[in-house]
Amino acid sequence: AGGTAADLFYLDVSAFEEFARSGNLLPLDSYLKDGTLKDFPQPLIDGFTFNSRIYGIAKDFSTLSVLYNKEIFDKAKVPYPKDGMTYAEFIKMLEALKAKGVANPMIINADFNRMIPFIIANGGRVTDDKMNIAFAEPKTKAAIQMYVDIYKKGLGVEASSVGAGWEGEAFGKEQVALIMSGPWCLGYLKGSFPNVYKKLGVVEMPKGTQKSTMIYTVSWSINKQTKNRAAAITALKFLVSEGQKIFVEKAGVLASNRTIATQDKDPIKVPFYKGAEYGTAWRIKTPSGLFSRANDEINSRIKDAFYGKLSVDDLVKQVTDNYDSWVE
Image (cartoon, rainbow, N blue to C red):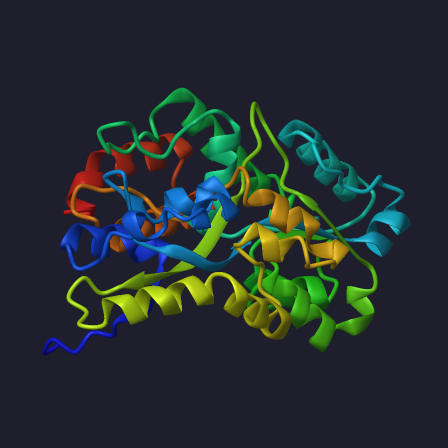
């Protein structure tokens, strides 16, 4: 706007593709040769890489894990979820909870980014090497079916169905046994539902042929036109090292810098941290850099599939047929 863009700014990974294609970001590779990069998990670097150049360093991050209520599991006499459990074991566990009288085992969102870990874990992919949508590929389609089936079989509900605004509130009100959510729930539960927080257990997301979770993150990036390049780079380096300590302590976020992450001794955060080493950043590569319309269109079809208005076959066909026009 009128050439007044900030020198140094936040950039959400979900919008990164669009900004990277615009040519307005400063490539940082040559300024970070002094070992800075080895302190960051590779998926966090990949999230802000475009055409093999790095245009941002993760300020902090969140991942998805399974948060469960130990008391509900104890009363149902169902063993707790555990790290390394497969999706097949996870579904069996939901069925066991349902059979023991837990009306709503989990919250499941009609939200594409929450489905992606199911796809990746199953050996599928969202787009192919040419950036075409890959929903029709068998492993991707099977994962979409598994996700929709959790809802259709009554193993999961949307938060609104249990009078909650989002999954954290549904969990806090003990309407469900578990949720797949992020570290943003921890402070919320501790503050709003301290008694439920005491019953909280957290494990990594289930796995398929491989481990998978989502990574949500924003970068510190630099305006290519900045007149204060040296100062912006000095500030960026501080903000992703010593400066990050302040964010982590005050905001309860996860440190993207491994050196600082090792100083975060809260055991409940461990599964979230582990996800940074193998997760997928919430960014879809498209020829235009645009994805938000496609995201809305996919989400509405996931919801329709939940409610039986669309079969998974129809969902896959509609997304495949229309995707190119959504990402123009």
